[in-house]
Length: 427
Image (cartoon, rainbow, N blue to C red; front, side):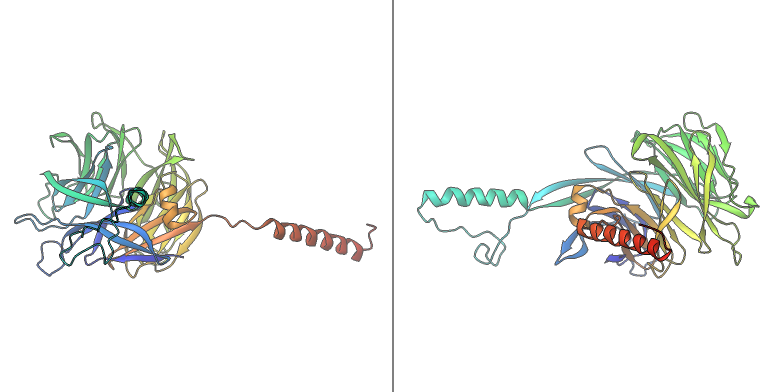
């Protein structure tokens, strides 16, 4: 059953899973001083009295001196030590470093703490025999009770978009090696930047209209850009040369549609094999037109399967970490999950949000996440301009006890024998 885990006080536009139980949300009210903050916030999923909730672990304003801008798009990468967030704020890409550490939590009771918050020293009982087990139990309790603590630091940034009017960065993506990131925006240019120098290494005139989405393939040698000119184009990351345009055949007149987003996913969890997925929406909204989900061969960039997702306009796309599932969100606030192999829809929640879905992210399913979420096949987080953060579980197929299977088998045999006797056949 889909549910909301937290309600934030700002419109969220970015959603990223930090690890198995933590996720990041960013957004805000922008430059207008309306009282709506510009914030990046990290939450931890946990159970409270059997109910799934999200507790805030970090809240950081993104306003800096005269710069009052909300994070509208972002990419997150982890190098084993710290997280690096590349955030699109107006015409700039601003970098933030985020670190996480585990902190032991001491369970202080009324006898252990004074009113000033300091720990009160216990009286010695004079028994060395009782002292050792008590200390040992206290150490074990410290090891078991830990919480995560996050810190964030604002790093360098640079202007990444240079349009004369409506100058905004609209998409950003890290290369797999983490040493470069790619940006696109309203000027239609695709640019590749080196980190940490922030030097521009490539500038490609990719589209005649603004770029909506960019993604780099798992090998890091191709980048795909989707623009408002109804084109999705493949580029070589080494020299910026044009590889091909994606030729979508999901509708009788492909020019009536545009690529909304593309994502890569591993096949059956195998990181040596991948496929690409895309969502397509009408270029001009007309009554009765459907949106579509497509699967592509990522070696020759040709479509292998396309399905209609219905008449709701798609707004977001995500692929699970193991590549088994795809999630899509719509402008009306609905969320659906598909099997990546067959593009079969297995679950849909209408009106998960009151307004359009702005982001989706699959939670990595590990032992830690299953301890909180239960034994699920997958779980998807969703955000919307309604300021809600929802979770969408994909349950395991039901398994039945052996005694039910046994009784069912006997019932089936009896039914077959009764039918044969009714038709006068010898048993």
